[in-house]
Image (cartoon, rainbow, N blue to C red; front, side, top):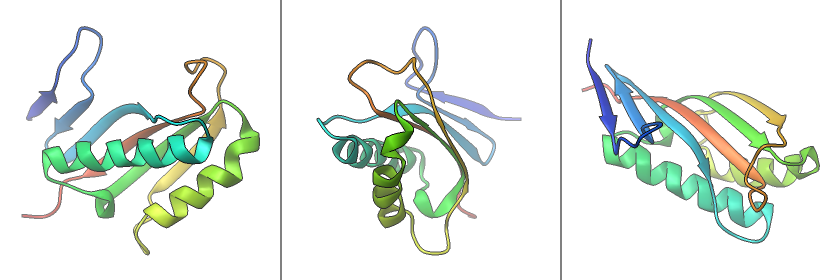
Amino acid sequence: MTIERIRVKTRSSPVLRHNDTVYLTGQIGEGATVTEQTKSCLARIDALLAEVGTDKRHLLQATIWLADMGDYDAVNEVWDAWVPEGCAPVRSCGEVSVLDPNSRVEIIIIAAMPAA
């Protein structure tokens, strides 16, 4: 069993690889609108996945937390444009009140490493 913690901090590792599975901590984005924040968040996810040698074609699971479920359609519009056709992971979306007051979306990802 191999566990690789990347950029370890006191409370968590932003990226953790266990064998051929990659776990990303919740990512938030920057911007004034939920659309801007979602695009920024997904760009961060792209960068973290690339850092460990995988990409969004290998997504296994996504958990999306919204500060307001009224943003669901706007987030889905950005999400649908980002996920490659035929590569949609299992996904859950819910509302949470504990996000940073300026954050409207947080996305947690589990992905696989590509076959060697």
